[in-house]
Amino acid sequence: MKGLLLHVKDKQFYTEEEGNLRLVGNIGIVKKLSKEYKLLHLIDRALERGSLSNYDMYDAISRIMYSQVECTKKEIAAKLQEIHVRAVMLPPYEGIGELDVKYLAARVDDVKDLHIADRVRDIVTSNREVAEELGESNRLFFIGDFKGAFCTIDIKKLRFLNNL
Image (cartoon, rainbow, N blue to C red; front, side):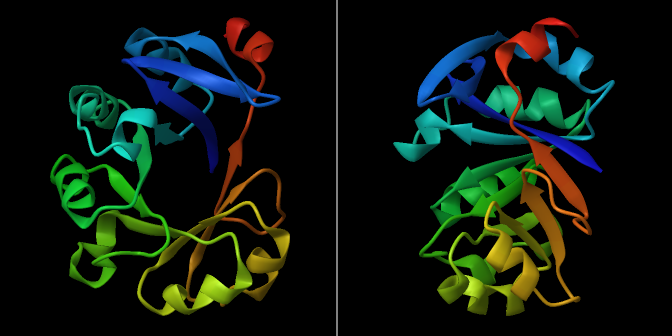
């Protein structure tokens, strides 16, 4: 499976290049992206502040393709799960045991956090060492390219997306 990592800010999608966000477009681009990708992995600047201002976008995306959104709060994760969006919990994995496992993943970028793999089925990482240590009972969503991953999540440049 192929996925794409995008940032969300003010109802717009962005890629990140050398620490800078580059505009990709709004919700209209999702149908074009769904022709090549099965999954959108989203990092939402508003969720980092505890706001659900882009919630309606996630609902619309979930009707077109699979999506997962990084978050730290159990309450936000539960809201995302209500609309069939996978919540990707970040450390310290607050309340992860109380969430629906079907729409749940953990972002693990340090081997010391691999203990969480016993509580979720899906693991998201960009760390090759974590990917190699991961047991066979988990599905691996790898940000980058990793042979044997259930899903590889691309970090594409804006010029590629303009060609869609």
